[in-house]
Length: 137
Image (tube, rainbow, N blue to C red; front, side, top):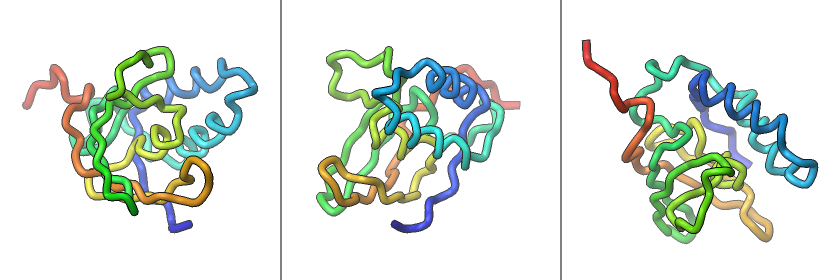
């Protein structure tokens, strides 16, 4: 597998995600371990310092999966926010923990369901909660 790209996570997301990991039942161990590995390697900034092209929790992100070339635009959310909306992905899904903290243009190889790997490249962050309500100085 290729070298992992650098990622950036807000201190608020980090705190909430560690709290989530503490509450997960044992059957979610593999998903929890993948997320914890991502959090441990993250550069942590305050929410107001997060660049607008970084995938945060509750961001809407457009990404392409190769080799298929299929493009997705999904809302990265917490497990309790999942519902029947097909445009959401949980942070506990392999693709969810893979895209957290990545920036537009970055790419990562990630385990594919059923074996092998896929390449995920961030195309755009079309909405980011860290940017809502911010005032330019």
